[in-house]
Length: 495
Figure 1: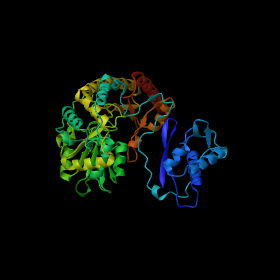
Figure 2 (figure 1 turned 90 degrees about the horizontal axis):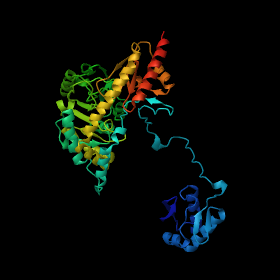
Figure 3 (figure 1 turned 30 degrees about the vertical axis):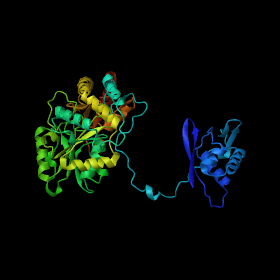
Figure 4 (figure 1 turned 180 degrees about the vertical axis):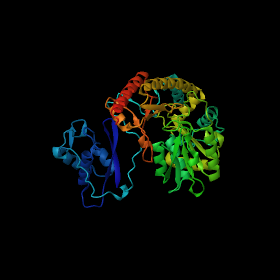
């Protein structure tokens, strides 16, 4: 018969389960000694924790008080417990040395049956070393500017509301969906309503849902080459065979997509700011891609990566605004506000919507309700678009500074991907190794990303990626100077 008692320990209440075998050969007092000793050695009962009185524990367990007294006396004699006159019985702070720690668990001779699935390692960049001075990591926005009165005001409004007493709508807070739909209409030209929008815990979750709904194991998925590594891994995890399609200065080379029986059912693209090279899908190619999708009965997944941040260029219509029946539109607040805010959205064709909502329910019921409400207030007040306006100006100044500093590497590297976002692509001259340049810069505390891992096919061109969004102006100057010197140093060693 299992029963429980609780003890205060280190400011917390610990629930200790005891199992009394009423019909077994072992006396109840011995059972209590064995189980209480195990709780002490296992760390469940910490040194200094006060045990219930013998009378209370006997009542809770439904045993005689004498059995509890005997157990306590044995544990006191062995040094596991100590008694304090007028205070009670406590776990000893000075356990017997031979019993001061739990025995190490035995390592099984072979992998357990329940642990035989293939190991999964997220295809993301490793954390930068602790001695990094300047980190040109891509995808890191300027966050301090977000911590202003407007953002805090949105959260204060959330605290004025009552928490729901039940799970919220899996598709998202209705008011947030309304605000997102209105924002996308203004900013991206999407003609969508609240019911077209599904709130997710970020773009990657949105892609997981779409892949689960659309792909069968063994299906091919066309993917930009080079492309977003984690998104590619998501499709593979759902059984897709990746079909790499090269990109150039006008984005995805649509003419290289296969047709007929070889046509993939899904195409993933980042047309607003191709990741990682930074090009934009030209308008003729946008129309060509949509025409191909209609002819092949395929679905386009449009990841609007960094689409909010454009410089010196006119906006191009989103694919979803040109043909919402063939496009799933993925968006996120991570790059606009902070990567720590795991909130995104999906705008899906009507036939796909119910399946995505059902899969979202299975995944996590719904995205955090308080966070959704804070974003609702932030959008509704107009503060999001004011924040975007400020950030465009901030990033434009940072981009201008970085390009100016990198101009000293003329002949060794060419800067690209300048139309949008907050990272640039550095194409290296012939004979230069991106890995060697990156190591030379890292030796002086400057971290950059090498382009090669973003390719599936071999013989990737030599290039570097430099994210400047989260850096201060002086860091950009310092890091660019070190990188230029590394390029010059490696350039002198060319054959």
